Length: 160
Ligand SMILES: [Fe+2]
Ligand SMILES: [Fe+2]
Image (cartoon, rainbow, N blue to C red; front, top):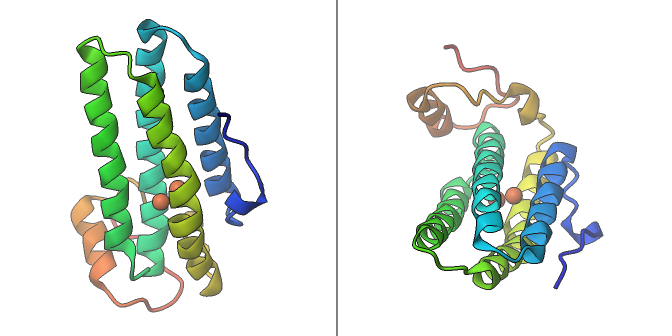
């Protein structure tokens, strides 16, 4: 099965949509390979891309004061744990491509539509552009402090 990008996955945030689209490409690429040697570097790429994408998405939601952030992060962490487990299995020589593709396909089709798009719609609704204000390199403590504050409008940069 090939994952096809369509309107139903469009969130309205071009950067996020581009990341989701790239995720689809990676999953489709993994679906086409035939050896464990090909799978290893692709799984690394997939993990890296997914983790960076999650960080950016969480930063957007954090800056916007999105109330469902903790649940959303839990969902992201679950997938990262699963990918880690796949990585360990592959390290032990199991060519589990089909299970990996199924996991990622189910994830992409469900999480983007049911979780990402509603959350991003919330951010759009309050009319902010958190991507311009997100501070991915800010120390975690400061980011957490920002998250605990009630939303007061357009976020400003967290002082380093
Ligand atoms: Fe996403
Ligand atoms: Fe997400």
